[in-house]
Amino acid sequence: MTQPPDSDDAGPRPVIIDTDPGQDDAIAILAALAAPELRVMGITAVAGNVPLELTARNARILVELAGRPEVPVFAGCDRPLRRDLVTAEHVHGTTGIDGADLAEPATALQPQHAVDWMAETLLAAGDREITVCTLGPMTNVATVLQTAPEAARGIREIVCMGGGFFGGGNTSPAAEFNVFVDPDAAQTVLHCGAPVTMLPLDVTHKALMADAWIDRLRALGTHTGAAAAGMLDFYERFDVDKYGTTGGPLHDPNVIAYLLRPDLYQGRRCNVEVEIDSPLTRGMTVVDWWNVTDRPPNCHYITEVDADGFYDLLLTLLARLP
Ligand code: RIB
Ligand code: CA
Image (tube, rainbow, N blue to C red):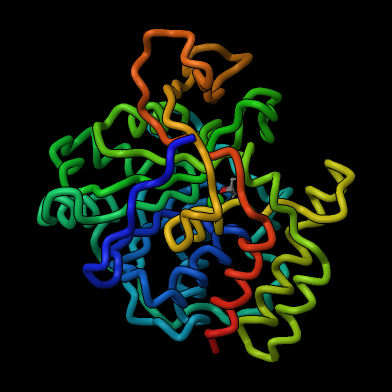
């Protein structure tokens, strides 16, 4: 098993969060905004769980909930690179963050398109300076990489929630939602030349929420705690019903937890390719875990997590927010 890259001690790690909120995205965004180790340069919304107008709305609601209205939010791509958009209101509700009774955002969207801002920011960055966290379909990041390939130079690491292999998919038998929605984008990211770490269903399903943990969020007595608990009560019902488990997976916050505490995770560098042609297995992440092909390793594929450590970290972070 390879260990993740060493975190440097050169001040807060600059990150861009690309997201389709989504209750699990919401917890990831709140956790990132609560972590002094991270400098969230901006949040870029993408169509995914719900259409772009709602993901861009929800991202602004979340920066305000965290007491961080100064963090810029940009709207990006409203559909995948070359497919029709598939959304997931059946999981996340019509707003995407159902379960939280939150006011409409007061903060305006940034006028610049997310893709233009991300490209500009990465092109102006030092070599391997900025970490890009993708929590939804990778359409925005892939568009940047296709229109400005040299932007990859400014990327320290792309840490994405997506994919699944050993445990299959959650949207089709073969594919996880983020990669199913935009398989072409995921394949572009995996071949962009920047270091890629993937947190797939194979790891997120090993850290299921406990109702007692959601109750501890509510017991924080804060707006964030109440909103997070309400969102997660709503969100987990789908997976509990589907999998017959006592709790649901909390996918996207694993990306932030990996950045803050890589020691909680284990994985392996290997080759990962995305099926983009087959109607049956579109979006399948084919993981050469046993190195049986001559395809070069292109991904740090994570499969293990310390679940207690993960949820303890999230609670500690969310407790810092108003
Ligand atoms: O498959 C889970 C992923 O799809 C998560 O990022 C969830 O928010 C949805 O975007
Ligand atoms: Ca997401």
